[in-house]
Image 1 (cartoon, rainbow, N blue to C red):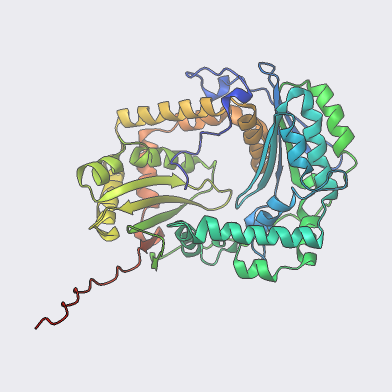
Image 2 (image 1 turned 120 degrees about the vertical axis):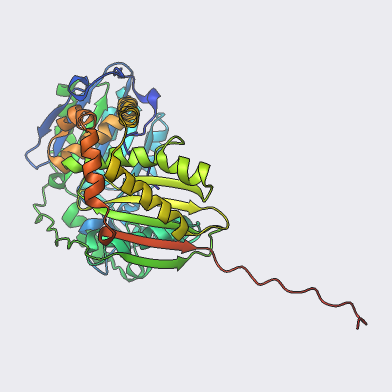
Length: 459
């Protein structure tokens, strides 16, 4: 589940110590950004910071669930696992050992829009991180044994993370309903079980050959290093990797929704009823998206938010309510996820929810609400950039998605520029019933109570 404002960028503060003033505006953020491009197309983003002897290395590939074809879902996520299975000069399990024995950490994640891999290391070991990323970009070991092993691992992850956890399958169903007909976001990142079982070794090798190449990637490094020395290392390890020059992904086109969509599912793991209500909104970094995120914070961020006060505290008809945007590169969602209190129904809660949203459209938000949200945004944004890892990841994302890592420096200003009029306008514009999809999630029916058996001999 995503938070209302996905601005807290993660990472551990001890990994770096860049000091950013809480009063800062975006154009004042002292985040150094330099971008170089190798002849093979690899973009290299550098953000040096010598305040702590650590460094973060992140590689972002322009491959996520959105590029997958029907019948071949889950491939991007499968390679998140495959990329740790060894390469020409790194044995199986060696990536883990080489990083951990130097006191570092590492991971990888997959989303609809990208796949990333990252390490944090002492600055003296930065070349190790570069070598490991380059070796698996150039010569990943896609053997039948590794493929079958990781296919089973992913299938088990789906069972554990979705099928055996309450409400999680509803998030997959939510996207199927809201994005029906738009396959890039309609299907799950984790992949369909039938697709994973049907995948062949030739299929996954072809997928890797197309997408895991320097001209489809961004390398981002933040922390204690000298740019000139770092570029020498990057040239040494990445320059010989051949580009693939694969055709760019073609968006199949999204058809706007014209009528409300509703569905109900039973979740065997659920204890209470719940529901999703989602509306289509523009993609991340579009002008209205900033106002919509501010609106989401007013409605659902924290215990003082409008929905928590009304639904949870005053009326006691909901146990939990979260408001969020998915922040996707393509058509996005504004969503409300609500856990309904015992004895109440989703329809009862939604009636109040829709009234609150209509109220914003009619009356707007208060100056105090807007100021509170902007203060939270500023705090989250500034604190979220204090670790090397957070900066490396965010800079890579801006370079990959927008072609300009330096946009990070002024992103905060876009939130701070949102006005009360902006919030009221988007509240009126996007929340029509015809733009809405609703999914009710119900617990399984409780067994009917049985009368106790009559004592033997009773009449």
